[in-house]
Image 1: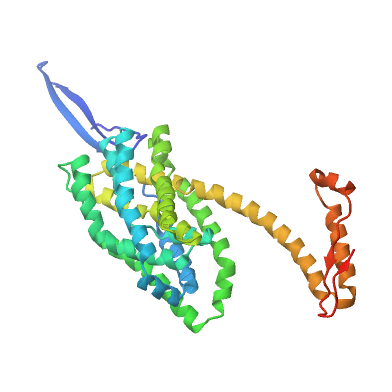
Image 2: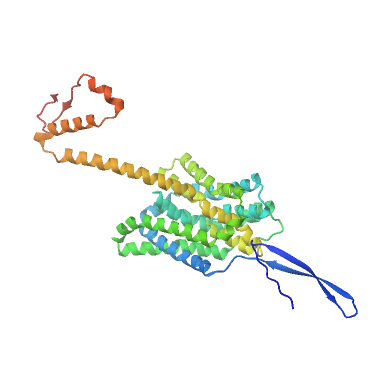
Length: 400
């Protein structure tokens, strides 16, 4: 009886070959060549099941809140004039697959990695795009409509790209699997919670103000959960990520953000829609990419091909994190300035007619004291006549 203990450091496929020799009583030696195929797949731990099981509930909870904030009249207007939806569709299914193909060829990706990034480029927009749209004050109604439209279009557009350029450019002999069932589930997960939220706000209109206050803090907690817990659960896959992959794979969503926004700006969309179209273009439903690669390859190749979607999922939001910090600091500064201005305006609005001139002079003197050093030379300049008009129609300008 023989036994071996094999320790695997990476997810991969290997073969152990050995020679079994037996010595008979007459001294004759029999040699038998043996081999064992070994497949090393990802771990199936309790933490993995917890993480994968909680994601649908958390995203569904957030989507219900977004449904509460949707405006039916705005959705109807987008349906009647779908110009921004057409722009987003063109960017998502026209630009993204070609960008993914170009990245894989320019940086000489292996066939598995090249197919991985191309599959991501062909996927519809993800539900997380709605959350980032809210964080950056975009058009939530347009974002929800575009997510729905891109998922419906994916039933045709994904097979079109994968069975043409995808198969020709990467693995001609491979029969790619399109998970239509998962596409349908994604469609339901987008529409269902949003519809529930719209029904809730119809019967409880007051809840809309509450959701407006708690939605962004809830999104921040959800993002932290994905980054920290998700990173810990999938840390074993980071062994496959080299520097080139980490620097080049995120170019797909980053260029999607940039080019989508530029195209929307060229088409003269307003700023909120420019942000929304850029976000919707760059953020793909990486879960669909995982399903395509999982069913198109045997183990462990499916795990290796999933490295690129994993890199994109974790590194694509990095510019957003930086922008959120910058926007937070900027809003704090603006809020402080607005508070000071509001106090001054309140003093002017509340003063009576007989002391109006005196109060204005006090404000002018106060502003002169607070001037910067660059304007100090004005203090020695001759006084300029200032006209102050009283609210009474009979009062004439008074020169000071």
